[in-house]
Image 1 (cartoon, helix red, strand yellow):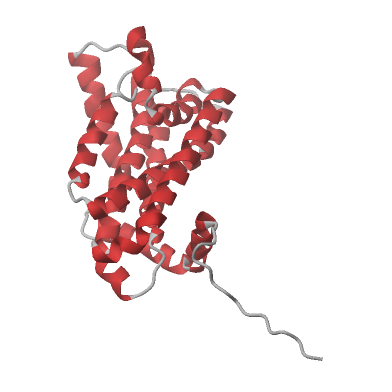
Image 2 (cartoon, rainbow, N blue to C red):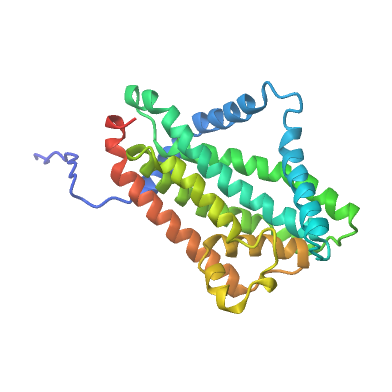
Length: 276
């Protein structure tokens, strides 16, 4: 009896689960991913006298300066303002620094990508993981400020990994999108920095939402970072869990950002070799 042999046929027009395939590739290259994370952490603090301690001191010093400015010079009275400010500042720094570093990572790896095969999202993911490590380390000064200011520690703090994970997903989507644009248009790097500065002041980090006039509240609600910072800050400052509506909005925004960013990145990834 003759059996017909089965052949594997590749059809480029066949739809693929790109995100799933890229996720599997990242898992196969997990040793390289971990190596990139270690390299970034080591190189960043190699010649620094304070080393990893700077990760904790940097947001702490920024918080002290902003607290003095708003509490003394502007007579801005807000109970436990240092805790409120630092909680928002930590998550903002994670998003801004990680997405910016993602751009530099892929631009730096341009010559390497042209020589050997590597899953291109690995350079963006590594930047986000480095930022996540820095965020985790920076929670130390936050706990210290809470202790010194006699701000209560609530069981709701156990919820913090959820907003951190959702912000990671959102930042990954934005990082993939902005990195792709930066590969094709160099000016995007500078434009993105200006955009971050604008979004910083449109995000309730250094001020409470309660002081925003009602007619301008829609601008705050249009800012996607508002939902992540509120979800991160509420267990810290208010000692309560975020409402289901806030969490669902954050989940939706994070997933949409990831899908759009990953789709655009994978659509243009084959052209990177001609651009970097």
